[in-house]
Image 1 (cartoon, rainbow, N blue to C red):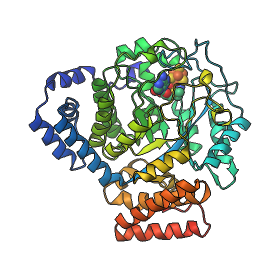
Image 2: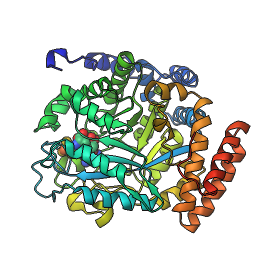
Image 3: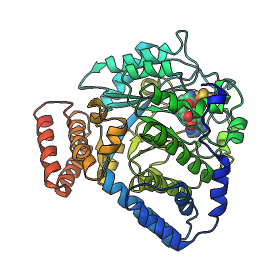
Image 4: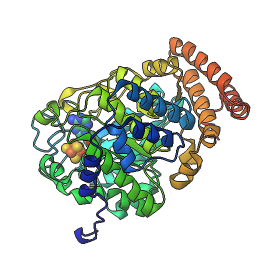
Length: 465
Ligand code: SAM
Ligand code: SF4
């Protein structure tokens, strides 16, 4: 795609106008938007702008309650778990907030060999993980982009102990349509890429070297991915770079663009907040820091604005913040993460990590915590393996429909986890959680869940519907 062909779907003028038109909070307007959000059809940009100004505690409580209700109606109490797998921290870009940036001499560089990747995968499998997010900087060892393709093959090829990885999602730099096709042929789950900020001037200021300087190449990446037949894409903003209100409205424009052009929006939205990173002053002093209150508001607003899209919360955030956002709309979380290549075998090393983590707990501890709060930790990979991706997934993700698959699959994969990997304490909490979830379920999904779990208890694995 040449610059002349770049679709101008991010309209900064329109965003600024919308922000200007909604400077004051109008409680009547806020309540009208919340009432509309309860219909589960999503929100328009102007309605999102109405919610962004809420600060009054009573209205804030109503916003959070509405988000919690919408989350519960669509997703029930399941929370999908995954782990990132950093294969390489080589990078040719100069993103001034990232420890992997090319000129950072404080970082120890490393690209894992295929055997080292397989070793990391074995460790993750032994912890109980089934879903991996492959992450890399934008510079690959000798073989170029095929390194990523080979790494995906390696991850899927490892059969170890009681399990295997069943879904590999990928977060790597923007690709050409042909490269995206190759990625699709590898049977990836979601292709994930964050625009960081949609504000062009800020983007140019913080990306000072390498291919990533090109805003248009990045903002059109999902168009190329979808052209190549990748149905499930994940977008996001790195909060802290620019005014979150602007970026939230721009994210809405990106979503509308994908919906209009491809008939389906993003499968997931990520909400990374900037964390301190070795060799980056900017990361320790974000120019537009997002407070904890605003951060929770962002999650709640996204849940109402795009009700059927998954929201991902990483271990950048502390355990407390993560817990609070589960209720507000988060549907996927990472756990036990390391952001340095080789970090699972050799543990966390700050001199090769991408940024500092806020939640250092193991997968077992996170699972116990989540189950104790009444959420169902899910390792399900059923949808994409049954071809329920893109528009098919979105159609299914309607209240009532999704629960018929997600709840039973969530419970059967959680049962697998409890039998194969959980500590005795986690098993006790988990079994209580499953019993409660079954009690709360309607008759039909309960029956299906019981059937799947009985098969798991009888020794079958990887059962889903
Ligand atoms: N190199 C590819 C890219 O930049 O798109 C993909 C991997 S990059 C390691 C993944 C994401 O990490 C980036 O998109 C960015 O949002 C996030 N990131 C970078 N530095 C960060 C920091 N200091 N704190 C939190 N997240 C950060
Ligand atoms: Fe490289 Fe990605 Fe870090 Fe930028 S954010 S320096 S592209 S790894």
